[in-house]
Length: 95
Image (tube, rainbow, N blue to C red; front, top):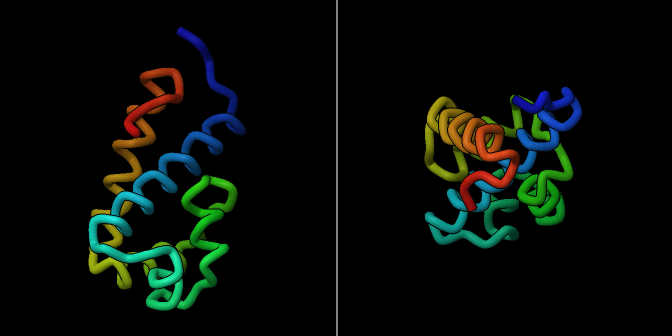
């Protein structure tokens, strides 16, 4: 079994978060700009989160969850499942 470095795990986690954020945003019919407005963040920050280039704070997760009308616990559960799928598959995971 291949060992994954901590930094690589962080990158995978960031990508998993971004995939789920993008999926949830699209499922409620919001653009990045609309989600930014609803959550109090700039569209470019939403884009960076979705691409896994930035890591959200706990406050950001709660703000995004509220704007997406999803419980933060449920949001994180989806991220965890995506993260685990990416780890098992050697990083590709669910798209």
